[in-house]
Length: 229
Length: 67
Image (cartoon, rainbow over the protein chains, first blue to last red):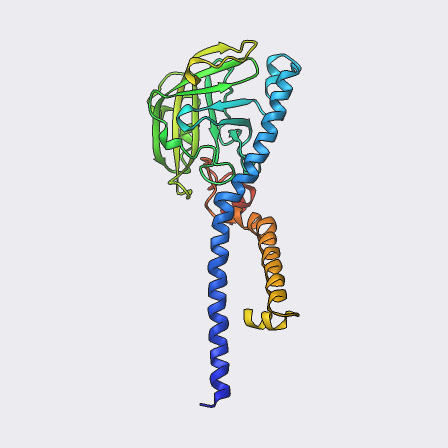
């Protein structure tokens, strides 16, 4: 074999090797992007939007119950078991909404009730990883833990009564007004949190159900209910 | 491939190193700003909703399910 042919083969092999290394670096960068950079962007966006809503509340808003459901969002979700963070809740579960580091309430396939409705299921979705990862610690929620939803005028205090650590992503029954799978048979005021599981993948869905325990009117200082103190 | 690029950069080794660094940062910027945001919805890692019709709530994924 001539030295010219040999160096040609060596050249092809070295380009192939460099391409493999490049592919590896690309995948690594994608992981960095997914698990870190999207969180940076989403947290920035979420805190901007949260601030805007709190400012709107402070100014008094338009008043009336209808005005609670605004484009800026409807309120904040507090789940002490998942950490001290508050999660802004807005309408819709489209990725472009959830990617802002918020939780969305379902408009389809089963429309969510809202906390101030007399009966129904308040159904929420948020990211487990990346894009703010607001429901990252959903597995730390245990039966009996409080979930508090804060609106301009009211704290809605829910208590977790059932969790479903793994279900099919096609299982829309968990969103029903009466989530029978959680063991309930009568209409009530429920809350349902949904996200993906296991962590870092979307093979299944993780579900947490709660039931309204009480409502607390927001006072002038926005004193938090006992569950959050 | 990278050797080929390196040999075509102007200047001495230091200048080439600086130019390489700038090129790398430019590539990372393009990836984070344009390529990854485009690729992400096509990959099945971020679906969080339950949905009877399709795997996720995204428009891109719904197209995927329709195919």
